[in-house]
Image (cartoon, rainbow, N blue to C red; front, side, top):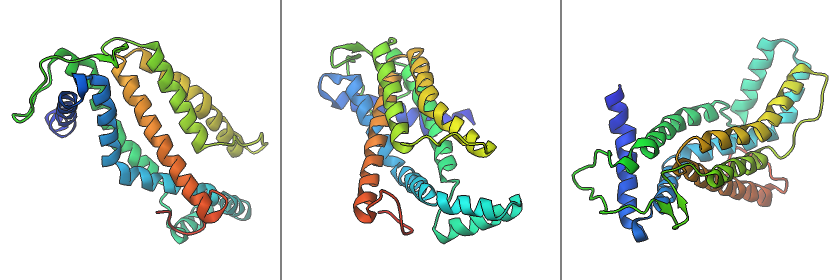
Length: 246
């Protein structure tokens, strides 16, 4: 299993980073990491786009979901009615979970690449990959990527906050209903606690990791902003009125 993981994820990502580092001006590892981030986002784009569209549809369906919960106190009946609603609007509420399952192994592999891969020259290269003679590990000549950086850690946390803020612009109001209050608590924790957690995690790793995280958040935020803007121009509310946003 470990061998399979290495051959499918770790080795291809590590070789891609070495290849990109050899291509960029000055063999700047930081620029290569940004390009690698873009490459990974392009590969998983169909999944991230589908997940994003699903999130927007679910937000638009919230009034109907609330109506179903009010009209059908039975949990079993609620589930059946909501599945009918999801099917009618072409929504798969599990798409986000599937995306997380795909992204997590990629993130773990990148941790390994940044932690003891390219900086220790321990990457098992393919025969057609030529490593540069020297690596520029100072991003733009300013930040040493093999060491910790509170600046990049802070950027990772801030970019995570902005991405979550765009995804959930409004925190639910205080409610006497337990489920609604739980949802409100989760929204607050996601918006404020998670970015802080990202900052502390990023600060424990080489600066290459928060640079990847920041770049990934920026691309994700731009993607979501474009999709929301297209939905707003098409429907006037930023929501989804039909079964698809292209």
